[in-house]
Length: 155
Image (cartoon, rainbow, N blue to C red):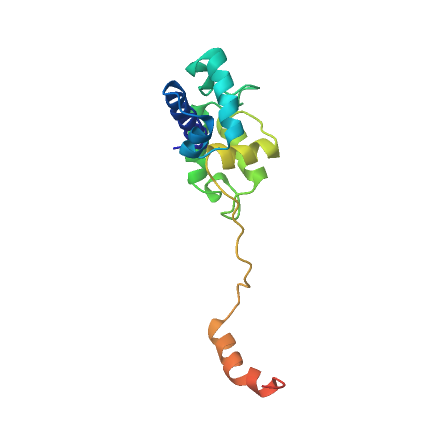
């Protein structure tokens, strides 16, 4: 259950308890919120009924990409960065923005690309591990076992 759904479920449970005549303090303990929230909910319930505590649609500017376009972008990103002509299979905000523009025709700012990736696609920041290409693990182990004890000062 998402956070907004969980919050609404708590308010719905509170409404049931309001109707049963349960005190604010008991409701707060039962649904796991502070008493001030319950007082605020009770005022809204008394003024507007149970519908006053239902979740409302988000206000503000609608997103530039609809759900179908987001799924198109998801499929395009799943093919990897190399499939889109980039030299390394690594996604950056600029690269994702370029792919979004290619597949949907919509230009997004870096901030909007970040919100798309983290909010709507569920991606998180991943950084590649910095390690030399020519790193030789067996040589490192040999050096630690033989050379380091010889040059180390003290116990």
